[in-house]
Figure 1 (cartoon, helix red, strand yellow):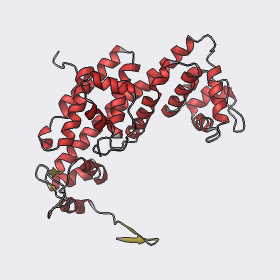
Figure 2 (cartoon, rainbow, N blue to C red):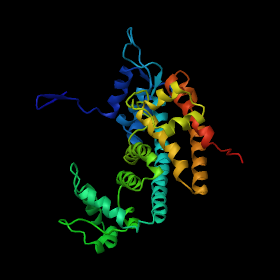
Figure 3 (cartoon, rainbow, N blue to C red):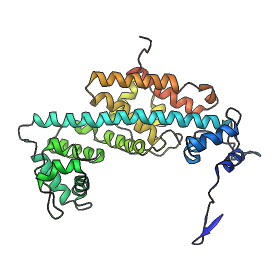
Figure 4 (cartoon, rainbow, N blue to C red):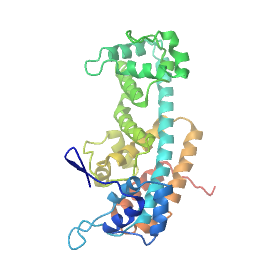
Length: 331
């Protein structure tokens, strides 16, 4: 133990020390040997990431093993780490497509508004950003940071980007290419309200998807702590109806959507088919989802025979995918 500034800090453990540390928590090494575990932690992943999935397993509540894990082998953690990685790749692909087609949707809508020339709405939004009482010039500052990039500098040099002036007269088709996904969602909310558009109903769904985008973009685990009830806000009505159509009952809906990560993934599955208009891209994602969900994810399903939580979550997403994404890979 290290003492620093009167605080006790945990000493960094060497990889070879981690195995006995896990064994103390009743994590077994029967389906994956201790040597193979050390090799995996050395070459493929780190202890923090792999053991993040231990929260999906139950512990003894009493007796001599109280606080230690029931039926947890290191192989299960390794398997979940691989599944998580492949899930993140697929989700990131879907969210990037959602972002791209959201921009197309905005441009197509703006084109059909008589009072809009492609500059007005952006100027209104940047004016609001410039004078925002809580976070003034947040988008301005974000744009200026990106303009330091050579690619964006060529695009935006003609708009007189100056540290002391408002940014204005950027055409919407160029503005959409420089803002972040979070800023895109904020702009989407602003312009749908400004023109009283029905698409405003998707704003809260897109905000949840943005949280997931940030997680997968930074390679954060998305399949850990799936038992956590950290989002007790009422789910969007569109999502409730979507899950009803998938045959998911009220109790199951409320239980699953109380977990932030499950909610975000659900919202992504819903929004992808709403916003992505390319049949080719949709079919490609359907193929990838089917292959992952009915292939790699269940490859070692025997590991989770006694895990009610993971089996329940799989059955929940099975209903969604069966209804909206599943394809016959043999055709």
